[in-house]
Image (tube, rainbow over all chains, first blue to last red; front, top):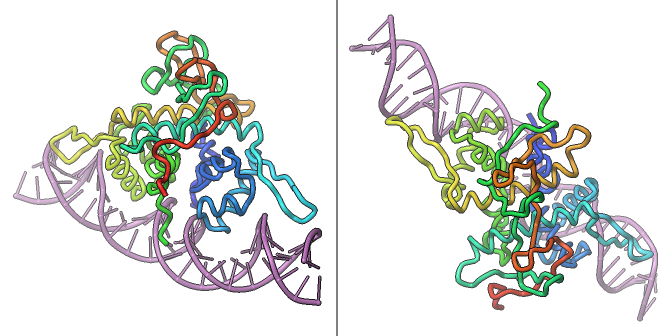
Length: 151
Length: 151
DNA sequence: TCAACAGGGTTCCCTGAAGGAACTTTGAAC
DNA sequence: GTTCAAAGTTCCTTCAGGGAACCCTGTTGA
């Protein structure tokens, strides 16, 4: 067998990992999110190999997470988040929140998020979209959905 | 240079990826979350190579995300989520939510989550922990925090 | 008393992907 | 017409995943 194909699994987590699960992809997305739109910027910020960055950017564009826009007569391009990509930033915020809480240590978090609606330095909080109460791993029962394997 | 060391980066996303960013790790975590606690169960559910599963389980235990418990006189072990690991399930729920929304297609989501507090089939929603309003990628300003690189 | 068994791994080889450096292409500006 | 800078591409080496076979431990049962 080849390297396992996560996209073929009947699991939304595995399918999402097929899009952003490769090494570096989440960090590329983060850079684009915080305003780095060009190849050279991202490459020198992350220290990623140019070859791998090329592959990741193309993969993210192919999956509709990033959009590649020319910004010059010369062959120069910028990468921007699509709506689909912007929603992936939710994942990054939760991922970063866990790192802030469990891995940042004495020094505290490297970055802070200011919520523009209220002006406060805030953290994200997971809530149930029905009742608005907190909703975490042990607050839910996992049931079979319509898209479960037919066999 | 070796394979890049994400743990050394001044970024909570990168540090979290050092813990669960390797291929298969999130799926291993999901399996444990939904009640698969034993090596053979997880191995046959995922179709992961035994070698890689061994490495991932040890890595997750070493980082305090899973706990390895004997359950027999014989050398038999079960893996359970720690508190630290349970909080990582937040990431999985958001990751899966994105897959449900963007990748599930006609068939609909493979699994559903029932929120025990209200009994409804629900999705998670990201909210500001100060004001309770929605908080997503373009609702925040990213600022330098106390743990930013000193240099 | 010793063979079979089952869970939880190790060990081996093969292939494919990441790292790193050097090279290429395109059009603009000097 | 040479230089420049952005955005790749190519090549080589090393390391990690896939897969199959093997091992180790204690229990059962003939």
